[in-house]
Length: 299
Image (cartoon, one colour):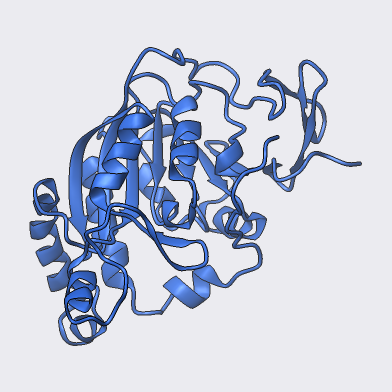
C-alpha cells in the first residue's frame, strides 16, 4: 500500500474514562446527539459505517440501521465498544485505517463520522476513501472542529494566538489535531463528490464556567435553538454536516460482500478465523469478534 500520513492511534488510551465518563462533558455529549438525530434519516437503512467509532459512545443512535459497522483504528477502543454494545450480530467490529478502508466499493448506504477528522492531516484522501465505500445517494454525517469559532476569533483579535481563524487552510494546534475552516471543508467535500445539504452549529456553550453554573438541560435546549444558525453563520466550535454521495459510481453494492482486499480490491471470504482475498493477495485475522485490518494475518 502507498505511504500515507501518520495515523492517530488511541490504542491503550484512557479516552473513555479520562475524557468522557464523569469528566464534565455531558453538555457536549447531549448537544451532539441532538445534532445527529436531526441529520440522520429517520427511516434508517441497511448498512451504516460508524467511522472512528471509538468506544461506541454515539453508536446506539444508529439503531434504525439493520447493520452497523463499528470501525476504529484502536483495538482496545473496539473492545470497549463490544462491552458497551454487546455481541449482537447487527454490530460488525472492524479495526482499520480510514486512509485504507477495507470496505468494498458501494457496500454501505450511510456513514457517520464525529470527533475524528480533526486527527487527519490529509482530509481529501480520507474523504475519497469514505466516498468509495458508499452507494450513490448515501447520506454521510460528518462533524469537524471549526477554526472560525467565536473563542478563536476573540483570541486572534486580542493577539493571544498567532494563527488566523479566517485563513482557509487547516491549523495544527497540537500534533495530529487540526481545526478546519468551514469553506475549506465544503471544498474538500465537493471534490470528494459529496453534496452538503445541511450544516448545524454545535456546542456554542463549550465553556467551563457556563457548564459549572448553568444547568446542563438548559444549555442543551439553548444549543438546540442555535444549531440551525450553522446554515448561514457557522461560528461554533463544532460543525455537523449532512452530505449526500453524488454520482453513479461506485454502484450500489450494499447487498454484496462487505470487505475487499487492501492490495487488489477483490472481495474477501471467510476462512476459519481470517478473511482471505479471492485472488490470494492477502489474509486478515478475526480476533475475538474484531475484523483486524491493521496488519496482515500471521499465524
